[in-house]
Amino acid sequence: MLRPASSRAPASPLGALAFAAALPLLLAACHGRSGPPAAVVDTVGGVPVVRNDTVDRPLGWTLRKTWEVGAVEGPDALARVTPAWLAVGGGDVFIMDRPNHRILSVDLASGHVVARFGHEGQGPFEFRTPVAIWARGDTVDVFAGRRQAVESFTAAGKPVSERPLDGLLQAGYTGEAIRAGPNGIVFPSEPHVRAMYGKAADGKGALSFPRRLIGVSASDTIRYAEMRIGGGHTIEIDRCGMRTRWDVRPVGAPDLAWSGAPWGVSVNAGPAYAVDVFGARRMRVTRRFGARPLTRSAALGILRHRFRILLKARCALDLDKFLDGAGKADHLTFISAVALSPDGRLWVRRSPEVGSEIDVFGRDGGYLGTLPSTSPYPELFAPDGSFIAIRTDSLGVQYVDRYVVEETGGTGG
Image (cartoon, rainbow, N blue to C red; front, side, top):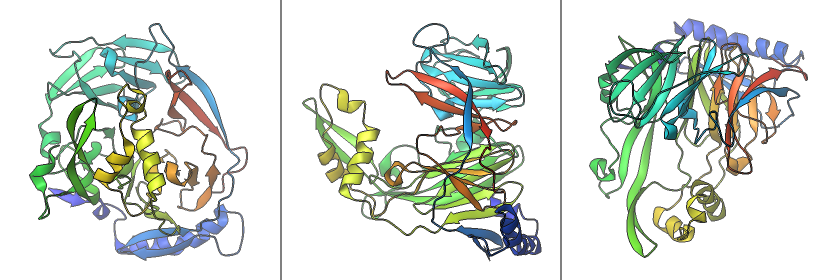
């Protein structure tokens, strides 16, 4: 049964109303002033909505790097890293080095690589095209794509179990990141649609289908968010003397920005600056930015970033023709990533088109301040409050870094 996550918390409308009524006092206390806070709190559908102002203020925190994993060459060189290929469980960080068909297990405290396991193959506990990785305590789970199975290992790389992926496929799993959630796992879902655009076309031949963030446990399926993906269609592009077909959506169209962890889930589902938080407190956190049009120049910037590898190839992609065929969204999307720390603070990275700065909000949803766009971003938080980031140097070499947060400038809440 698929049910909305909003039915989980707060336990009753009275609880939500009480929390909403108390929030202004909490915000005022957190911001250290007796007057009215910058945030306005009301309740919509039983959920507290914290509406923060749009005046940025610097957040005087220090993000201190404690270790890095990665190298130009050698046993710790990483061919490629994405957020979907990282997991934190127990006292370890797991890095799926997919092109090399292996997993690195890294001690969270010291940064020492304590195990390297896995090899190429299509049999049980072998890797050919692993897709995603997540952790449950001291056990790491790997979704083996071609085998359509979940394989579990200890932190030292000892095989534990293998089980089918039937539940994920039935829920419309898209092959993206999977995270351990408050109860089971969390992942994006596209029900009834699998890759090919023509299968759910509207009357004009364009793709339109729901995209969801769901949680799956042994006994339940919960819908955290849903948005409708529309405007998808097929275009033809001439490249290297060949005509190829591309399934595309309008450039700049919003997508789910989300995070999942045992302590909670956060998600943005649309172009507006609004994040739903499902943690110790259920609330929606917003900043009152007005809609901004997406210009052609900004849309081309999005394409330059998306196709930066193809632009270096011998037959470069013609971005103007691609944009003409794909079209663009009407408005900028404000948020590119969200993360929820173990103590309930919300981290939001703005999209590159609006600056890439990182906004941080307190446990009550009140705005604490903004970190510069050059700051490392938490792809994953560890239970001790430190976080894991991905870094690429000027030579294109990737590293996985651990940071601790030093609140030298005050927390605010």
